[in-house]
Length: 61
Image 1 (cartoon, rainbow, N blue to C red):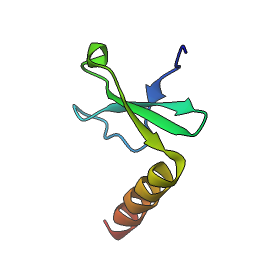
Image 2: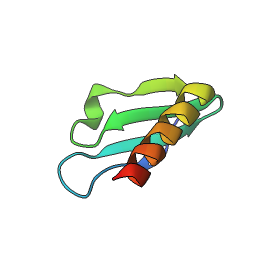
Image 3: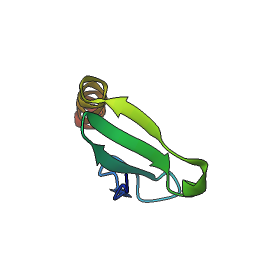
């Protein structure tokens, strides 16, 4: 399976960047500085919960 990674919209503009790719049942996450180290697959419900948490934290800032 060839994954198409893109910079996450939840990454900061500086050094802290992660990339995400769509999976059939969730997402794959990897460090943009070390893509050769592989990725972490997460399920759809976990990815949704994470995205909601980040959005909530951004709204508080």
